[in-house]
Structure formats: structure tokens, C-alpha cells
Length: 108
Image 1 (cartoon, rainbow, N blue to C red):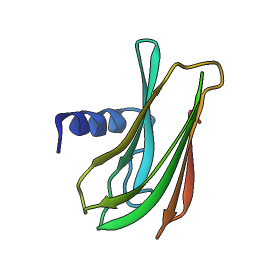
Image 2: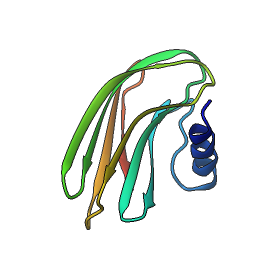
Image 3: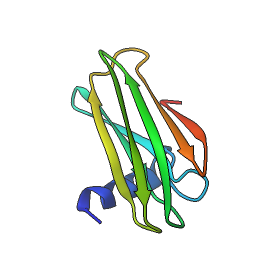
């Protein structure tokens, strides 16, 4: 596990951001850094699982990224990182499909 992933999981546990786990193995975590918002797609599964995801971030520009997440049990993994300049009403949407299907919106 990288130092960044360790810090990210600790930060998520201390904040109101959802932490990936049993119910939602992949989720969004975000933080403001300087004049940018950094949005991360983070995975953490209780058992090995393969899921697909689409991340859409809208701010001063629109960004869409997707991928296949192969998650090992108990191993946190950063799947994608997007940085945008936050505008009023910026938002991120994560769509997950596979063994579990759900959508996560941030900020809530």
C-alpha cells in the first residue's frame, strides 16, 4: 500500500466522505488543494472482485474516465484521479457496475 493510499484511507475515515468497503467497494473521495479540487476513485473490497466504473466530473470543464477495477481483498487501491478548478455547483458522479450496481454523487 502506498503512503498516499494510507493517508487517503485515514483521511476518509476521519471525514464525512464515504469509505469503500463491503457495501460499496468503489467510491469517490475528494479534497480541495489550493485552487483545485482533487477527486479520487478509490477501491477497497472485502473479497476479490472485478467491477467497472465511470467517473464524470463537471467543473470548469467536463471530464469522463472509465476503467475496470480488479480489487484484491483488503487492499486499498486508487483507481483514478481527476483535478478540476471548482466552480459553483461542481459535481462528480461515479457509476459502478458488475456484481454490484450503484451510483455515488459528490458533493452530496
